[in-house]
Length: 70
Image (cartoon, rainbow, N blue to C red):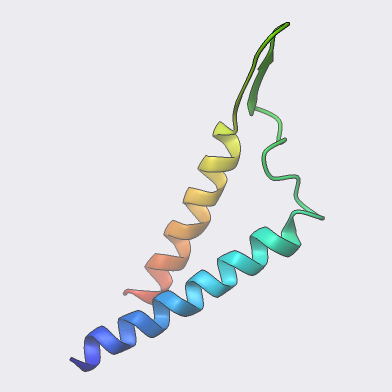
């Protein structure tokens, strides 16, 4: 049972760090408007898909997970 407790603590710490990065990092890193993000606007509709932002967030989370769970 102690392993589950440690895992929950690590997961909580990771979520707090990611939340702070998203909240405060938006001022420094323009999440959602990076070069390569797809934004199509028509007369009556618009479509936005932040693919580069998703890739960067995925890479960062993968590196953090590999550091904690090795």
